[in-house]
Length: 377
Image (cartoon, rainbow, N blue to C red; front, top):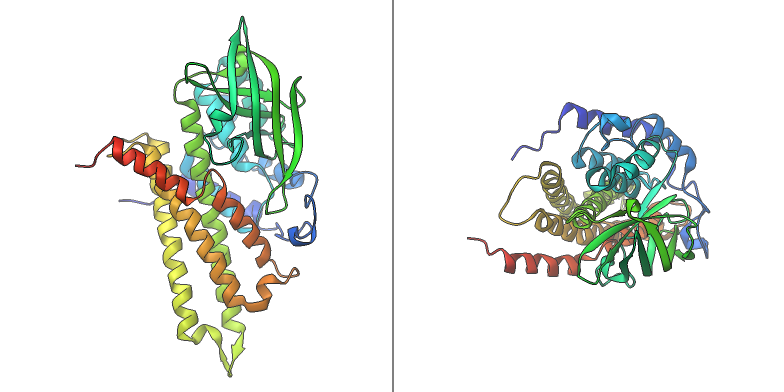
């Protein structure tokens, strides 16, 4: 197996490192000290810098001003963004734009893609469902009424809902088919209510009451939602990996300086063994991430559908990032809870990523269903 990245993918990662180099993880109030959202909006200045560096159009074709790269390149950029807890809808907007490009109609493409790649508009995806436990497409119904579609239902915990100009909403029809609706912010019948993440970011409950959309604003291509969901889950794994790598580095730096009995605690066997275990977690998270991203990017066949590799990656990401931040808290002692030290922020973000798009148990169940449906020889 060759994990070597192409020159274009490496260039995207290097550009991301340059953009994120000056980002401070504690630029907003601590979520531990803020009853509501840590900020009213995403980091708009950073969003503009990402647009200037052409990192918002990575997955778009050249005719929309993009670089025509793949899921691997996006995950490399996301990995860097998580190291500094970048407060931007990079995953959601890029993934939504890629879904419109791959499965949307020509009018939607012309209207959204070039502007999204330039950072002029923000896209997001309502992928949580009503409770977070049931499939997101089951939370909203879609029915055709003449030349329009009518949507009813509730999607909770929509990321960056108040920043997004358009939200992609999965919905199910009476025949069991899944469609993706492009719902503009403020559209008649679409109402937002505030919710808050463990990371302190403002989410949105999107309530749809007889929302009417033209056919051009509904993607009814078979498999479009499943493809988008897999890309979002894989991107979440990339965020978890980047966060975990930064946390383990912070832990190494701290334990190398913190002395007990006249010696750095990093030299104690109990400390070294715990750190080594978390390093192994990160390497497993990395290997499964690139396998999933490669399957999505290449469309290569395998013993299981690509969703199987995505499930494995999300299981490792959810459990791995939780173990990494828990060990970091333990080895940092009281500093882990100090609101003037950034580790508690990483812990809060890790919990959000662990549960985003389903915890490990949900993906273990999905993997079991895939194995039952596709027995391995």
